[in-house]
Length: 374
Image (tube, rainbow, N blue to C red):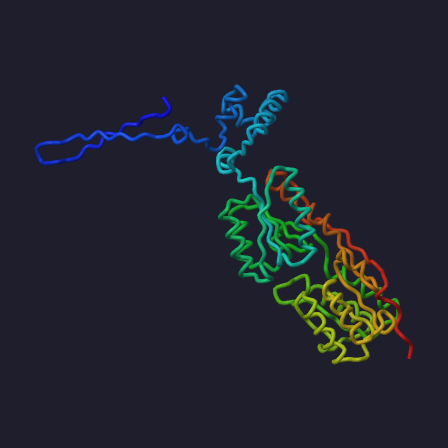
């Protein structure tokens, strides 16, 4: 036969005392009756590998409990069938989500993109997935993001800096969620940190400029409110200059967003407030780049007329003309150490170090030199 016949029985109530059965028939092409191929399940894998579903599950979730030969066989079938394990089912079985969260101030910054890439690479080595959120330098948004990540069952969280609301940190403590502060060495509530001392790091650049003979300084900083790193860098500059008997007035400390346009405006404000400035210390390379661009527009010769120093050592900084003197931060190492430390916390490793120090060093390039005499 070229067609299959399907019969349906429809019962219609015709009156209170009788029922009439109406037999309806309809023909369907064979193609329409063909069994639909659904998504590949663990049952398909088990059947193709000629093992039980429990064995497949162990091979995926506890590979050390099956032989290498059997594991290779099952993985071969999985690859052939295109099977993708159900993350929800896996989480229920292991009682772990396999996810770790990270909250950074912004995603519009190469230093964070580079760090998160390494962070994710390290997590992948241990079978974890990364969920990323940003706070826009707002502690309230960050607190909400912490709650959002917890609602998604993350096993741990990396936080940037230490400007979080204390209630948000208490929540992590109360729920025994492993977490680590990145980018700073201080940590509230005796927490863990992978980073460096921002005050001491920026002093490397200040000391460099002092050794060149500079005495008239300006500071182009990020917004210090809710940003412990930006605040510490400003305080570090002022601390060292005070030791050298150099006092800066408030009008030569300009804060602005980490944005080229804002940095250019900040640079103009600095020179307008004090035209005698011979060196500008920038709290981040983006600010230094903006200052450099505006200086060149105004016809200033860098570094002959004005020295500029940055912080972070972004990739672009070495390719500028002139190339930028700056503070190099081992961002890759910092995030790698944070990831491994967080994984160790999750796995219950004891006696972990409270502080993991990141390598920091001064990189002298073409944007800094001795001031003109006279």
